[in-house]
Length: 361
Ligand SMILES: Nc1ncnc2c1ncn2[C@@H]1O[C@H](COP(=O)(O)OP(=O)(O)OP(=O)(O)O)[C@@H](O)[C@H]1O
Ligand SMILES: [Mg+2]
Image (cartoon, rainbow, N blue to C red; front, side, top):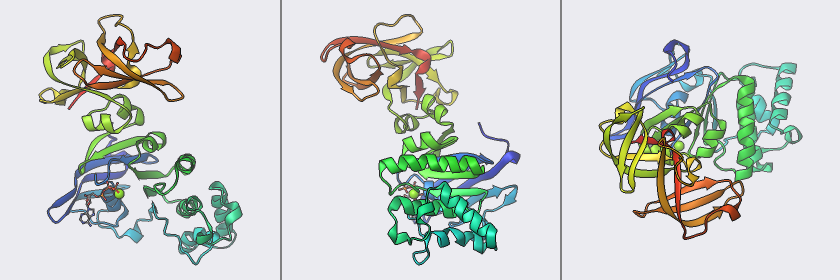
């Protein structure tokens, strides 16, 4: 999935960061093509901000190289990068109105007169701030202030925009509408955008590709669908979406591309990546929506029995909470009418297609 180096807009080559003896980011390689929306997703302390700040020029790397449009940017000063930045705390100029805040980056770039006015008005309209042009930041809500920050960034049409948890301070409903707004602006301007979040749903909704980070390194890079359907590590599987995890040991040879894992509840088949062939502790991962109630129709399926502990109705579906013979708890999602489902405490049989399961380490 990596792009040829020559086509990358941003080419991160072995970039790492140490603070004294502490490693904030291990050597990282990442190629970001022009116009891509790439999200750095990971828990607190995984190195997301560290990586973003090195791309921004706010932090010097310990080792490695940053190449943008074929030029060495590793130590280029921040003000010579012309990159748009949006952070969680919007840092608007408090003594300037909304309009003046948004005009500022254009004035810095010597845009004047009608052109200046037109671009400010256009951008404010795009983020629905038309009615607020003459207010000061303190007279705006958090969401409105963050819209000003977005407008101030997009107004000068930077080729690269870096955003660090820009919606972190907003409530859920506002965050969701702003996610779509940012996505729309990105599409419209064709900007190359790196976005940092620890919110997996946000990453799935917004990104062309997601870079999953944990413990100062990249765990997996791929499209939202690839990461969800094909997690490569236990961490990626459990951090994004719901996963059922069944521990086991590899047995025998692969059969039709599938490997067998001996688990406490029986032998189960799944897909294994070559690099995990010799891993000691393996886990079979299967998403709740792959599970079907009832016995397995054929040998291409895994089958297990379990006690139905509870059925939780979550609006769009039912979530079946199941307990396996060894006490492991797993869940299945099911769209049938709740009255058609087995009852609490019943022993039920369920199955899933073997190739939908991943064996990861
Ligand atoms: N200036 C610094 N000096 C020492 N350690 C630092 C410094 N800046 C960051 N770190 C450490 O580096 C690690 C990665 O930090 P970073 O800010 O990149 O995490 P993050 O993924 O952005 O987390 P969050 O989601 O909480 O913002 C953390 O353990 C952090 O404490
Ligand atoms: Mg951070």
